[in-house]
Length: 236
Image: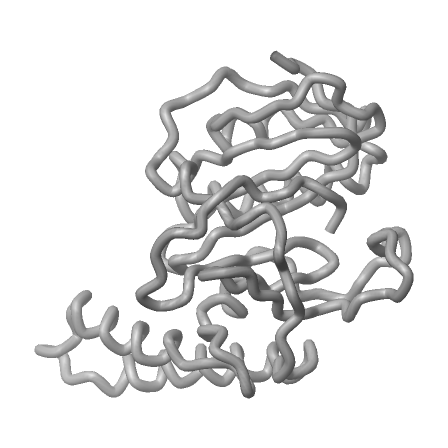
C-alpha cells in the first residue's frame, strides 16, 4: 500500500488541504475515498445535507506505480498534509460509509447544454440563500422547527439551474467547497485538442456532474438506479 504521497507542488497540497478542511467543517468524522493511478490522486467526499458527491483531483509529482484505492479519515489526512514539502501520509483505512461504494461511472461523459455562466450560477446560489433566510425569518415561532426548515430547503435547492436538470444544491455545494472561484494561472488545462469550458455540466448514464477547474460535484438523477462504477482519476 502507498504510504506517502508527493504532490506536484505546494499549491496542489494547499488546495487539497482546503478541500479537506471544508469537509471536516461540515462533518468532523468525515471520510474520504482515495483513488490514485498514474500521475493523479482522486479524493471523493460527501458533505452532509447537500446530497452530492464532491471530487477533488490532485496532480502527483511522482506517478503511482501501484494503484491506490482506500477510504480514510478526512481529518487524519488533513493533519498529514505538509504544504511546504508538498507531501502527505496516507492514514490507515477506515470502514467507509455506504456512499463510498457508489461512485460515478468511469466514462461516457458528455457535455450538456443550457448551463448558465459562472457569474449567473453564483448569482442564482446567492439569491437562493437569501430566499431561504428570508422565509426562515418569516416563520412564526411555533413553526420554526427543523422539519419546516428542511422542507423549505428541499423546495429551494431542488429547483433546477438554467435550462438544465441540475439541482441548485449541486451549485451551492460547489460554491461552499471552493470550487466556484476565479481560475489561477497555474491551474493546468486538461490535455485535449480544444480547451473545455471552465465550468460545464456533464452527464453519464444516471449521473450529472458539475465540473470546474478546482473540482467536480456529482449527483444522481432523481429516481435513478444502477449504472455505477469507479470514477476515472485524471487531472480536472
